Length: 300
Image 1 (spheres, rainbow, N blue to C red):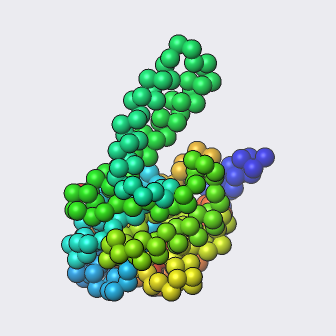
Image 2 (cartoon, rainbow, N blue to C red):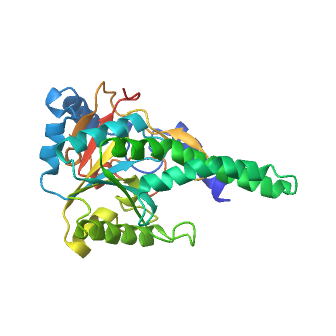
Image 3 (tube, one colour):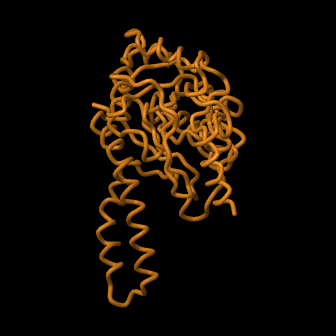
């Protein structure tokens, strides 16, 4: 029933002049005007100096991304730009907390995938078991292909890689967004307290920063209220971003103005009702982030 309702909402949005839920870029001439103005000013181009000036002395920087949609080359460029002024930083990722480096976890998954595929083909396997193993391998293949290059880039820049999600999620027990957000905040605070790194660049799904229907409080807010840690958040936004939701449906967001280079926009300049995913109820908003980094549709 929920699937039917969701499809009906999509169809209604396609034929109605009004957005299905709240404001999108296409429905906000003021925001489009701001974006056009900001993105045509070279002073807003993503550079080491601009990024460093905006971050200041904040120990944690959030980069909100859309899993499998945000271009990995664009994210690698952000890591590289960040590292130039903060060479003793850690890069944190949304994966079950462990004492091992995140890169070592990614490497183990990479090395284990061929074995899983081999096991799936064993003669004694039932068809159901074979399909389950192949689906498992496929999902982690996608995960490694997206996050692996980011961990590799951090390693090339001599930045430590850390996993900071809830220690039990998802392998021992699936945890709610709120539980995971609290765990991430605690793990980030502990990482700073350990002096393992001077500052942290946390690459994490946008919904963990912005309050949504799944979580009442984002990690950035928890760091400030529970640990008195000041941070800054950036929404990494592809100008042609496509959203794939948990039902497997794929649809484009209302596109932002295209850019040739990554540009930084102060979110407070935009319409406060502006939603990142206007066809998803409880969508994160642009103003849930301190800044947006508009990324070229095909990053160099």
